[in-house]
Image (cartoon, rainbow, N blue to C red):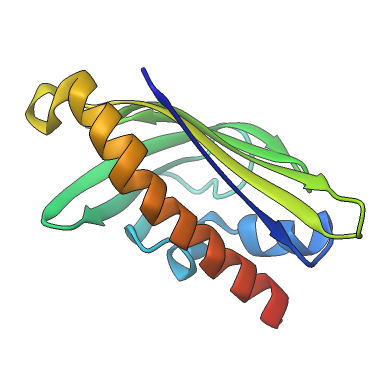
Length: 147
């Protein structure tokens, strides 16, 4: 299961970055591949929150089913993917020396056979998804810094 890791420095405190990242339903504001977020239950924050993310990458559309597995305000948000694509992911927020935040996004994904299996994970993850997530982090940085 190859890992994907992208990061960006944001000129804002971890608390400010968390204000933008914490509302899961607003991830569509900065994630190009996230079309819609639909919660499976009343819970919308914290460990145990379950949701569907309608995802579109080029011609591929799928529903990513996720559960939040880690929730430390201003520090970390982790998810487990249990839909078509499985695996785990995590956002970490670390203060940097200039008072800003180093935001890191890591994912370890398993693609189904019809998306290329391990080869699809390697090519789709390391080339396609990594490029999209870099753009997502630039959008997050812009959103946070413009507020």
